[in-house]
Length: 456
Ligand code: SAH
Image (tube, rainbow, N blue to C red; front, side, top):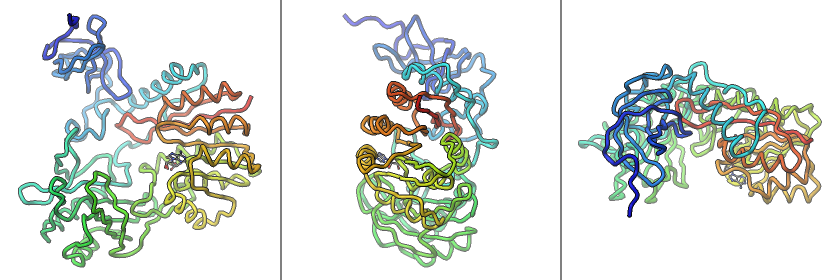
């Protein structure tokens, strides 16, 4: 017989929210049964409607807040509830920073068994809005007009949007301008079901320091009607444009970019700085989207690396070499490794652009290249890792344990895998000294942190 749960689907009830999940949902307990309530905050008394029940836990919709949390904020964005791009705009920014610090602390202790070390207050932004330097927006049609916006949560319906409050204003302006120009020239939006039409995405990139602008039109085929007029009108309406390119993506896919990129006007690259280092950014280059906080993060990584100029440093998972070049300012030699060949091509170009001769970049899996370097006699004094969400491969951690660098600096975008990996490094003779969370994505639940480990 099916066991009766304490709550039933569609039941309405009043609960008190006890906690906040890492995804930003409120947590309530009803006779020991856990209910997740998106958009409800700890301490609040709320009316809810149960919408789904599993064996161990269920989900409910927030109907009304009866007793408000003092940390509740009015979301500034008019489409906050439909978009899903931000998850915690309804929480004050100060409380977001505290929640992120707490998340890191909790996870380190629960998964890594690491406690009694300083997890510092999250380094946040003075102005946590308009921070993104890149917008990539899908194009659709509604009532015969081109629209541009975002996909409604869990759907492929595009909602026409004029602005995004975490996006640089100029990127919003570019998207609006291209939309207007596309309508004027009757450019058809790509229809993903029929695989017809022309314009798939518009991507806008902006150099935070240089203010240089790139506009990317992603089309299904080579053909783009009224190309010349479109370029002229973009130039007339958007200040500081340095590059207008067309990327061709003929595939049935939700991946934005295709393989072929052609310059329509200007240069293939725009440039930007993080600190004193200049970076070339092409249409498809990976480049951190919050440059202001990237500087904060890298400065912390550099501080934790504690370099004197005499050290050999390895930067594993180096991307386009951003951290590597930061380190190269203060190290004798830096080795960077990254799996994406295009990123390494960018890394080499960036090293040259800045006149660094003390860096070497390799393409490959960090967990294969590190042991190979080790076998070649490379000995790093400091190893920096910045892996994707799944964390470091065990083979890589084993190589660190054999190579015995004095310090390891671990830059992480996922506290859970950070905790798992720190536990392995601690078992192998390292001590986690301190952890610094940095808020790279205000109003989202993402948390980035840097940890410093030393060899005991
Ligand atoms: N340090 C860079 C990029 C960090 S993102 C920066 O701050 O900009 C993580 C990077 O790891 C990505 O560029 C991804 O392509 C790369 N990557 C993923 N798996 C990898 C592996 N097994 N070996 C090497 N690099 C890998």
